[in-house]
Length: 114
Image (cartoon, rainbow, N blue to C red):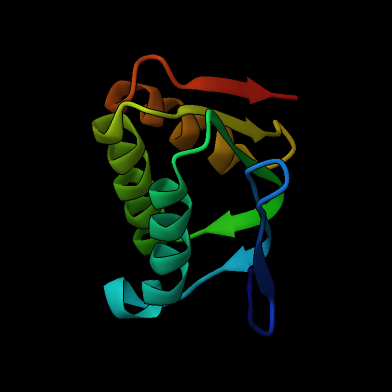
């Protein structure tokens, strides 16, 4: 499954339950992120043992995107079937700040910043 726009892509690989986000996600509001949220919902419904969210190449995520990401984390937490690994980078300052907040929503989330 893949969602892409002019400056971004969100790709799901079901063989290893990995979601990869690249580029700059500057969509507008809940409506703008509806396709991304639908992809996240589908991944959660598949209930894999571990879901990996790779953000190494995601240069920017606006507040609506962070809200969408937070909803995804809460969904995974509430399902209680999957472990969530979020992989990011120190290269983009927003990741260090925003991704750590996801651990408040799901304390057993594994955050890896490289």
